[in-house]
Length: 273
Image (tube, rainbow, N blue to C red):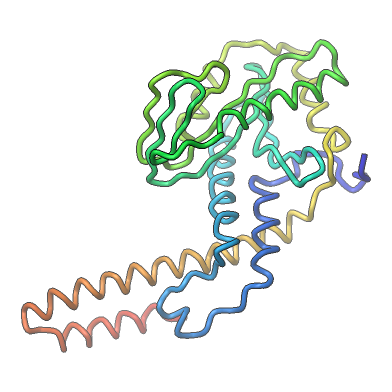
């Protein structure tokens, strides 16, 4: 087991920690944008780092939903497993049991579920199989340390989908949106009374139970916050320029294009850093 003496609790890990670490690693080699690129709202993200950013956004959104769980519940984020850099997005432990959460950020996408099949905008993806595998993996790891371990329930959490259609519930995996998650957890019947709940929580909170030590979360948090600000600012500028196009078309049709250009130039200058 790798050295974990510097880490006393897995609760210190932040939502999206592994995704953020990969995102910042990829972004380190991306050249800074030129002034015109910033002005016109070109994204600071590279093609490679963009999926990591989207994934981190989703995990952070789910982490935010879990902050208001009542006393007795414990939430752990970005739990490293295996030797290939894999992690479990979140684990929730409470009176209602142990839950592994696989987070998928599909903003404005259509999700269709039937039994063991899940499709995103008509494309079949292996999310259900992966979520089930994560829960089984944690069950096996726990059983080696705690033979009387409770079962682990896999959840697939969808962030900001446009529409979710569930024709047939999966046999084992529960599919929820991030907005449904907290209420669903709170409604689960008690299956982990004390002191079993405390024993399970202590086991999963132990750094030595997992495969790798924690990265520095302070640097990751600050780095992500800075990049996130740049991404959101670029997005706002693109919307601004898109709006300018619509204004220009309407103004040209009304013979007011010079005035529209003058007014919009003032607006752009007002939002420049």
